[in-house]
Length: 225
Image (cartoon, rainbow, N blue to C red; front, side):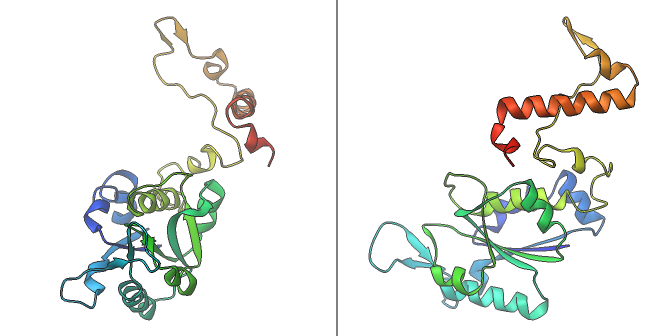
């Protein structure tokens, strides 16, 4: 699976993709992550990619042409299943959306900055608009890293335990059950006896009951679905 990320701050994305699961996925050739510097596609000697907004107002707006140059070059090289723009006013990202994107082959991600991007980029090129929550960040780079991480870990072969991603929180609209490891007792706090019993059926039932209980207490909105 290939990710092409267009950004004005490529160095901001170096660390998230150079460690842990995302690094292993790339080393195994399961996922490719390519970060493109938008300034390389500017058609002026200063490599500027923003300008004042029509109608006045605070904040600079990212211009059409650098994005168009980069997007059209990439599209000439391969077919993209989706062109995703990370934006606060997009569809709020969740596990179901991550699952749907994990079956794709080629994804392009656009990172906004400053006040935002010219609306015509969204109208002409973007197929999906995704938000990671109801708040505003300085740019789309961190949301792009979150989106990429959530999708890549779902690709078969990325995680060492194939069942791990399937048992994560939100996979069945339920939060995960409490988890424990050694020691069995710590400062008077004990691991539930059922988890030490070795009875797999009862353990599965306990975990499901705990998932429902935790979800009802913390995220009752998920149970409505």
